[in-house]
Each structure stands twice: as C-alpha cells, then as structure tokens.
Length: 484
Image (cartoon, rainbow, N blue to C red; front, top):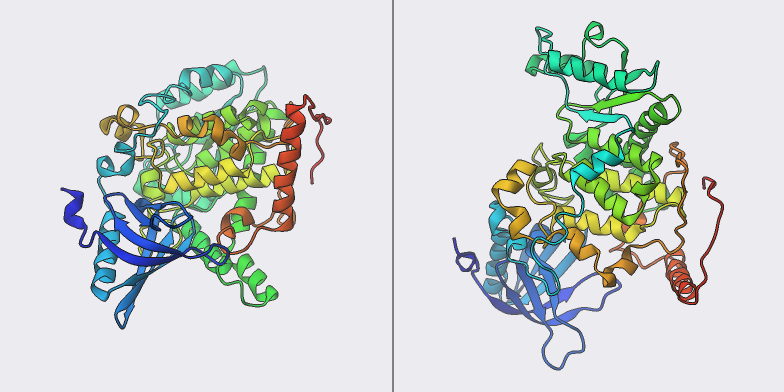
C-alpha cells in the first residue's frame, strides 16, 4: 500500500485555531503520509506547524457555504480546529486524516521512517539491559507474575511451588511471603471458569494471600474519559465541576494504586517479607504496583536514568500491551474493551509522589508529560507493539530510534530535570488519603487554561537555580523530607 493512495487532497488554504491562548495560524495545509503541515508562507513570522497524524484520536467535520471546519481531538488531549476553504477540500482532507491516523500495520508507522539528526539507529536500546537490573535488585525480594492457571480442577504446578519455596529459603531466616492479588476474591474465584485461579494454601506453605482489588480495563478507561469531559467543561459552577471530578473516580483509582503499592513496599521494607504481586495477566495492575513500590523504596529509581530503567524493565520489557491499551485516548468514539490508561494512571501516581516529595525526584513533570505523549503516539519505537516478541518480529530495535536517546539529548534535559532535586536515601511514604491527592492540572488542563502563577513561579525558580549552579552554588536540605 502506498500512502498516496489514502491522500485524497494534498493541500488547501486553511486557518488553524490551537486554543484560547495561542494566536490563529493561516497558510497552506498539506497532508503527508504521517503528518499534517501548515506553512504560514514566506512573509510570516511563525514557523512551520507540524502534527503527527498518529496523535489524532477523533475527527469531526462540518461544512457551511463554500468552506468547512475540521475539529481534531488529539491523544495528548489537545483540541485543534481547522477552517478550510472549499467544501470538497474539507471532506477530502478529513477522509485522508481518518485513514492515515488509524493505520494498523506497525511497520508502516512513522518510527520506521524517522531519522533525526544527531541520532544513530541502535543508540540507547542497550542502555537498560535486564541483567544489570536483576543484579541491582537481587536482594529486593519483590516478584510479579500472572495468575496461576489452576482452573476448576485446581491443578498444581510443581515448578511454581518449588520456585516460591526457593524464594523463602533464600531470604532471611523466618521470612514470610505474601501473595498480593490485585483482583477481588470473587473475581479470582470466577477466573477458574476460564482456567485461572489462585494459589492453593496447602501447596504454598509460608505464603499468605491478600486481595487488594484494582480497577482495570474498560471501567478505568471510562473514568479517564469522564475526567477529560469534566476538565473540558470549565464554564459551569465550581461546585458542579468539583462534583463531576469526584464522580469520575479517577483520583480514587490513584488512591487505591498508591495504597496497594505502599502495602507491597511495607511488606518488603518493614517486615522483611517476600512479596509476589499478580493479577489476571500480570501485565497491567501488577506492573503498576511493583513499579510504584520500587519508586517508594529505591532512591536510584528516582533519578532520571533510574526512572527510565524502571519504565523499560517494569512496563516495556515486562510486556505491558501498549499497542492495545493506548490505541486511543479519551476522545475516540470507538470503545474497544482492550483499551485502558493503566500507564497514565502510573504516571499520575508518580506525579503525586513528586508533589508530596518535591525534592526527592530528579525528574519533573516534563518527563512524565513526555512519556504520556509518546506512549500514545511517538516518532520513536520504544512504545511500539505489545510485547518483546512482537518487537523482535518487527525488528523495532534495529529499524527505529529509542525514545531514551531522544530524551537524553542535552537540549532536552532542562525540560525534564527537577531543579530542586537533592538525593534522598530514605524511602518516601506518601499520604494516600483522598484529601492530599490533587488533579494533575499540568496534564488534564494544560491546553484549556493559561499557566497558573505557581507555574510561572516554578519557571523562575528553574532559572534561579540554574544560574546558581553555574556560579558553583548547590542547594542542601535534610535527607528526611517532610510530607506536604
């Protein structure tokens, strides 16, 4: 298939509206195989505007008279409006965007064509080898897995039983084991019908099972959709808006995820126990809990390099199905059951940790926003496919660039770093009540309201700290950071 076959109209005159704070752009709109471009013309002061078509989540079109309007709702939660001259041009461009933004073949996506200056294919794919990770956490006994496939007949697996016996034997004398199941007891019992189930108590001496159900799948996606809808309706009264935010239950999901991660971390740190976390497939809420628990316990995971390694090991290499979970964002009219913003929930939880412990994370909001955007649509290949097997079959590591190589360029580092970071060797135990948790305005409201005074002040702090470091000054604080 040639991309040209899907492009009905290559160009048209258009006006782009990007939001309440950005001035409109006028110029020539062009459709390519992977991008939408608006060229303001040689006399304009603004640069070429570019949108990766894969970022488009939904398209609405309407015509009136001899012109038309296309509204693009993007996976990064932007809403863009294109006013186009000509009815036929409007309809043809809309159809072209619809076709090119929903290509199913992985190898036709833009990462296989992206060749940025200064980067070489193969760079950074070797930054986070699993061998180094496992050596570092050899004595942090925190495991993850899918559910045991016991089925209705309560089958047993001798190898699995031996493995968990060996885990306890290798721990300190008298250590206990906890199986932290992220499903409800009822859901775990019902899973036997389809071949799943739970560990038999008698077959796993020394292990105790705890159920801490976390929402997953479509209910989590619906919560995300309702949150975005509420955030886009700011003209209603404050009381009604707050009521809508509460009704979507997003912060309740954040609370439950952090609470379960704290439970796992407490078992490892305060009780010296071995903790096995699992859910249904072991590729969603399981990864959410284990990655947050490591952030709480492990100071190295709170550095930029350590956090990248955490995402690589606990999400990408562990098989979180990004291609399925992040096929659409909050605006798509399609509602496949396999879509869920589990990775976004993880990033929101990390943002809450950074807000409660503003000195303990080397990275700031910029890195979290970048990961959110690239997980849903990216010129890099890091989040492509849904497993390591698929990435190998598509030759992702040899034919695309790694996101880490892009983010670790010196010019990108200022956007990612926390200027107030001071290494904290202690565990960070967040408050997990609903009251201290906050809406992540930097993500959910960033395209629909001007920067708050606090954000402007943060930029000034960045500049002051950067200038002081240039002069040889380094801030110092106590390692025992108070909770905010």
